[in-house]
Length: 160
Image 1 (cartoon, one colour):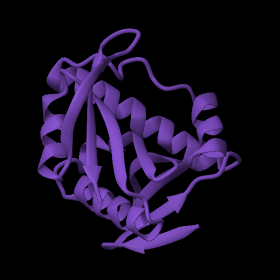
Image 2: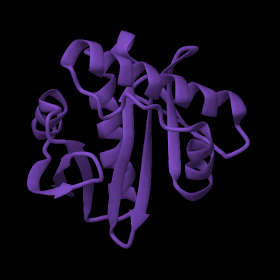
Image 3: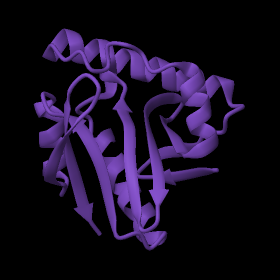
């Protein structure tokens, strides 16, 4: 399924879409490297395995975002009851700061409203101040923290 929104193409990825799965892997790897080099963050330094991406495509709504012919972003939406969970949200570093992340969130807000969902939740590494600020600037509020195996995350929510 392909949806054009704010001059971006949002494409739902299936588990057998090898090109798109490889592109998702590439974006996540590039973002992990960029966050390490420019912000000293290590939480995405180990790349999310392709096998896990393929499995996510089978179990969740995994999107790639294209601008003309370039794949510029990716994210996952998992729906549980009336709540959407956003994860693996990444904009290719060379496109960061150009409004693509905001357009992705606007798409997500409209998608969730159309599905009659009540809120969107996500977690973000507590040291990722840039990401936390981005989400707050787009209407999310921090509702708590939680430990993971290797670090702490800030739990965030936006009511629709």
